[in-house]
Image 1 (cartoon, one colour):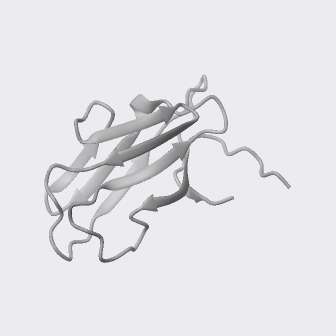
Image 2: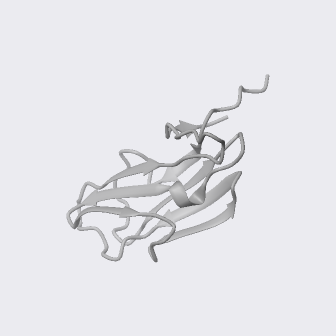
Length: 114
């Protein structure tokens, strides 16, 4: 049975690193796929807030540390902050996005596995 469309943008499959993952190389960034079942994701609205020992930094499509490819229906995104994380550091990443609908729908970001 097909699933119902999800309103607003959502993270598809497994973000890297996964929530609670340990032993992540300190040079790794944050990678995820963001999708929209409707009109598509507005890439200019995707924000990735990273809280680590360097403070709180927000990255978006205007940042040189934010890379993306794909189409509004499905973007592959990678954020690689300029400084590697410290050994045994806890890092928090928060993602926010809006779709291209009028009026736009803000995504309640969660992991969806079909």
